[in-house]
Length: 95
Image (cartoon, rainbow, N blue to C red; front, side, top):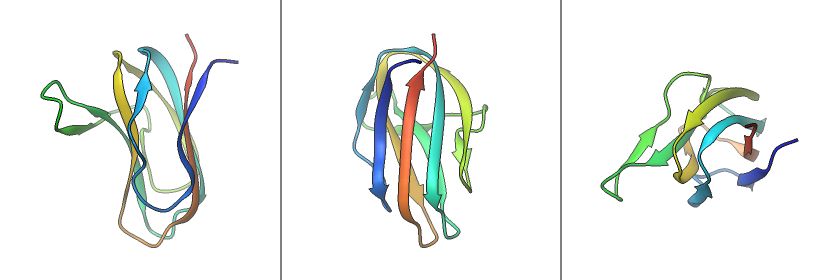
């Protein structure tokens, strides 16, 4: 099993930035979404703008997972809308 970084731990708001080493991964989110959306985001090259990771189910409206490939950089789980609770999100390196 690959190395995992915890992006949310029993949370309900956008998590802090974490370092992604680069390469393929799986974004997994569990918990009560309550109408919220949880998106995997990566910090853009300007060092200020958070970009949504497209494709591969990195934009979840319920518990699930999806694959992604990203270069090295900062990532986070962004929570928007609804009344979520107990969200846990991880990014696991699979390469």
